[in-house]
Image (cartoon, rainbow, N blue to C red; front, side, top):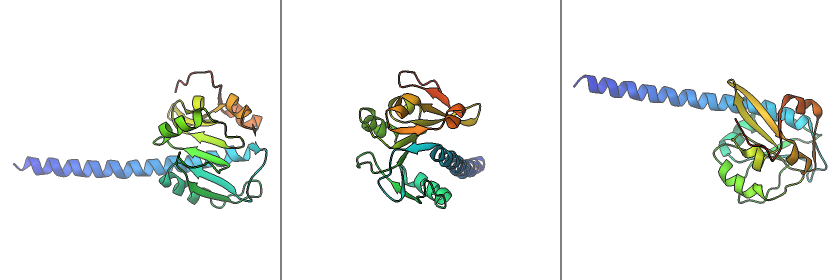
Length: 179
């Protein structure tokens, strides 16, 4: 009888510590991704901007909060960023769209057969670079890496600097994702 309460207490402690560690790792992951994204923006050229602000849209409220806290002081192309949560049913009025893992399925269907010129789409879910995004994060050897779909970039009226392309795994829409 005494063993059962101890097991329950240990289980609760383990569950709590796992959740706390998981939240910390998740926030740390997005802090790192925000640094990558800041550099993606610096090495990408847009044909034009529709606003005097850099409109940074995110498919998750929590991720948007992390990005805004990390990148609010940045300035790109003489524009301060504004951060906005956007869901796949809204009209995309953004310069950059970040699609997190949890919402990738709904966005994949929405973006697959539509063109969004002058919009940089960044994702973090397997297969998104084939169907929807220009840049996709993936893990290789426990390191954060990224791939760029040059076919999608070419059709989007964006230009990505060769320096950034040299650091990426280059793919085209016809290839199969293997991460």
